[in-house]
Length: 261
Length: 245
Ligand code: HEM
Ligand code: FES
Image (cartoon, rainbow over all chains, first blue to last red; front, side, top):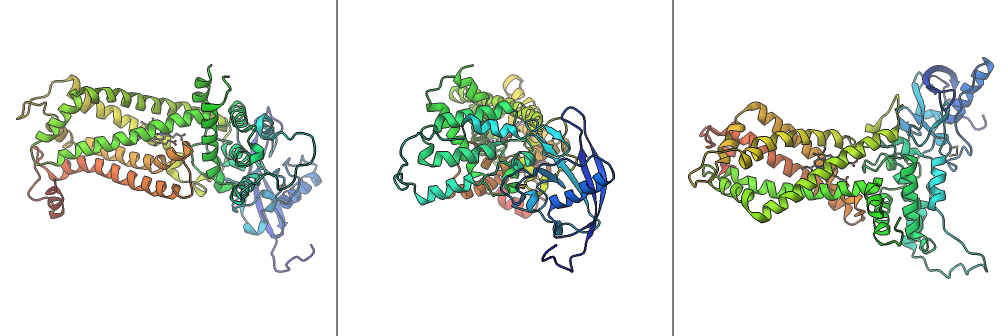
């Protein structure tokens, strides 16, 4: 590997991996051994090594979700040693490196567990419930016409910063996975506060929160007990303040919107 | 369903009921605690019995009492409704390995267990004191009031009763340690200026309220005679504190 550290000793690891053939069949933990893992590999590269071994042995490789492998897309949904995205703070699984583990370690790897996130196969889960919540209201309407002047709508710096922080959510689902209640409140709150803090989000402000919360409940996510596991495990540091904003946006919308349904 | 029932049965709506009732119960705790401090007066329960007679007969208090019944009723109902919903949201297959202790506080994850201990305590507590005071027949005291004080003292002379009370107060303390601040967050009352204050006020509230309630059974069990009189051989510190009442 280019620029690799010659002193980094390769590791041998035991992996307890959740294997499940499909959505309708009960899965189980299966033990695998991987050898000569470089501490400089990412966690996903280590799984690639496992899969190459399995393919060479004529076995079914472990299905897991991944795409960008640089912490942007939020695909890499692995529950590692009892934590969303593993032990390191503020990272996705693709940003977790094997130097965080030691030679001889046993690592347990499971899929996100939530009724609203069914397991497709092995470690791969269906997170389309998040897409449906966004479709229910996580957008702004932009009308056609001339391009507005960039500075036409004043946005205070403080609000712009807070909205931007909320906008960094990559919808990875670590919050749901870590939450005792499999609650999607941190995810929903990030989008609701991002858009309700900005002038562009005002026209749909009330219907947005009403519809997104209704969809969240319909998908079967749990309620928020203000435990804080979600924010602690969030790779981009979405804060619990957003959940308070969501609660008051919801209450205000329900109390004052024209929607009687 | 109308928009009102839809709002109140949504996950956030249920939590708002939980929070409003929970914070209301916190105000009840303060009133209950302050009134009960009269147990420490050295008057063989005269003041305490006047107070409990007032609480049991005053029409305004009796009206507010219904609010308290509803507050407890909704809090407990929503506790079960939310807990069962939250359990099914995780699904039948839980994690094989889960280290929630590395990302959150124990109390916040165990509000249901803590609440259930409080509930069991509450039923026994209500039966022993409230039920007997309201519907039973107690002997009269020197002012011809029902002598609830003597019932309190004799109850707190039984070790298992004291253990139950202290365990319940520890549970209440933990419940409030998380619950106080959580209640504000549920209502959307989060602000970088006030949230740290609410958090520490909640810790102080939890410790002071539960310790003060627990001090009552402990005081009578450890330091008084059968009549509730402070024993001469009680530690000087206890004598010093008791003389303030
Ligand atoms: C004097 C008695 C009580 C007080 C002062 C009290 C207070 C509170 C407060 C302030 C909260 C926070 C609400 C929120 O998170 O928004 C809470 C939550 C909770 N309480 Fe109580 N409570 C009491 C008794 C009980 C009882 C008897 C039960 C149960 C059977 C119970 C079960 C719960 C549960 C499960 C929660 C957490 C709900 C959740 O966040 O999912 N509580 N309580
Ligand atoms: S694979 Fe895209 S964030 Fe990890």
